[in-house]
Amino acid sequence: MARRYRRHTEPTTDLPRQDGVALLEFALLVPLFLAILAAGLEFSRSLGYLQIAASFSREAASQGYRECVGDPAPKSSYCLEELRQKLQSEADEILPGISLLISIYEYDSAADTYTRVGIASTPDSPGSRFSATGGSITGDIDLDVVRNHRIIVIGETYVPFTAIIPRIVGLFNNGSSVFYDVTIM
Image (cartoon, rainbow, N blue to C red; front, side):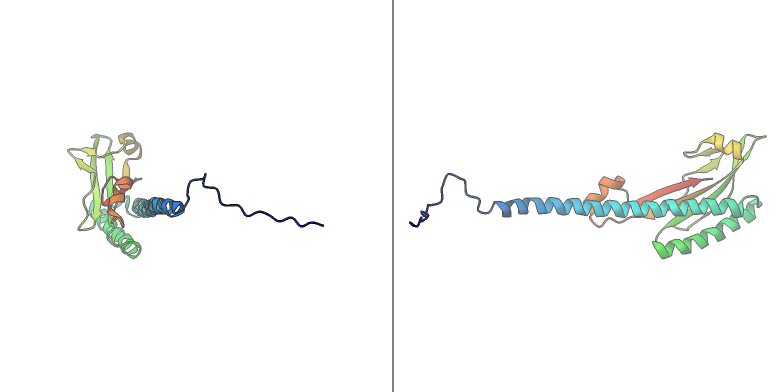
């Protein structure tokens, strides 16, 4: 029986060389992957801060409506301030620097005017985006809701946001460094 031997063949040189292609692909894709990862982390942090702002504005308006509506004006302001201090201490445990603002507005149907019954805010608060001047209420609010319910409570929250990666912050919150949320009850 005859043995068959394989012939040794030289590698073909028709194919292009692949040396370093994987390293080049890695070098091009890693920065892109890291940028996408950083953007995702920053976006999730932003959503968390927005959730905190929404939660505290809802809680401020809800508790303000339950506990402080119906009190005369001086007592309302005192009630709102106590409530704000209680919520502020809870907020400072979660995220220091939050500013809370709670206000009560009343509609007088006979005179067709609005008055602010009480307001409570942190000393360093940017201020309310709502006001009752000259008998009318200003701000982004549906006046029919106020007329139908006669009394509304507005809870406003300002949450400072510092981006980990400053260049990405402009993509998610228009470059602002404070998140704002309002709840109207």
